[in-house]
Image (tube, rainbow, N blue to C red):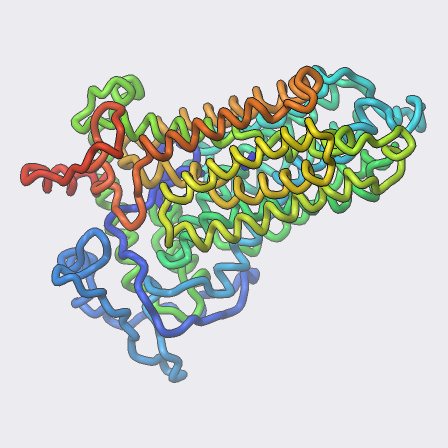
Length: 592
């Protein structure tokens, strides 16, 4: 799972789909990046601005002199303002135009420890799977009241593995409401209790039921983490760092998977796999301590009416930068959202049936399809079961499987490592090539790699299968893996974001549960043809990208809605520009 990302979510909305306000400044060039101290306990804002605000840069004036894309009405880029130096002679850069400074990065990493734990929970069952379910390390024995393995069939093992995404679905359902009420940081701290409880249940398991319960409880922690990490990072990010921090969560999840597989090499034998599962609790305890040194989301604090605390938190995230205009813009945006919130949002049925002022059915279809296709690609099957697949592909004998590390386990390490590299590649090309292009190329390439896996398996060419699996994970993670997580906030107006993103999160998690459950069954039933269904599903995603996928690159939500509104249609045959009667409607959508 992975497994998105600015703004505030409505009650019940999964935070991973937090909206990006359409009227915020677009990325603009700047000439300097300022670092600063990290997240330290009790540190006061390094340079809270008390100077009079230049009235030329009030939110109203800024809105008047720029278009939705962040350009001036004449088409020229707005130049970043370098304000006067402070009493120490340090030049103060307007924080709206800054990139990623050290304070922001350290706080993002601290929050993303939950994502690393998420990846750990997912990846920790891969390499020791045969030891746990098939007792490949020897007959079941009991030591100090604990069995060396928990024998079970492939169907039951698939259920145990699938209970993690099912728990994530449950966690995603309540995390948005809780975070909007109690704060992002506080809920992340409380959420570590699920990681700790799940790790203790799994590591002390004596039965299939206890192991499954532990996986489910850990899954709840994964679901909460998936939502709140992306919410905090998107609300803490500057405009120019939002793209990087948007993919940061996926990168940390893959790092967690990779690290769990590295450690698994030494902890896969019985009964050491219990230590492997317990490490998740140690990560949760460590993060709980670290989070006390991290400021709460400035946007949450401002929305809660804690303006001084919000300004102080924003300054801690913008060390040596002037936050006065950014803070005023944030408050003005929240005030506008509060006014628009007085009008009840449309119901889920009204949105799905097209009975809203603007017909959003095509865009809703795209969001739901993307979230489903991300999980039916077969990539999670690679993450969960690559060791078993490669062990069969290389025809490892029982003694070879007992030898740690086996060739299958070593190759699994590479699969995890290449996923992290792929996300970094995708983060760098997404804003250059565009979402639609990245999705089309990635899905077609993933389908081709699935076909190569089938061919290699049928011809009994182990190296070819391993290479194709590496390529499969590379092309998937660089596009299809994280484009869906950006779709809701870039395609849907704010007033429907809560209901649709909640539905999309449910579709995503439930699809992953089904794939996780049926994958080992398909493995036994299809043998070398295991990836044949995924050739078809990834090619279907490719056709969707060509025929239906909107392009949101560089566009505010209002423009996307105006171009792609209406029932489901082929975007390749539609070239639509907003009519003269639509400017007010677009302005209303911006406010939402």
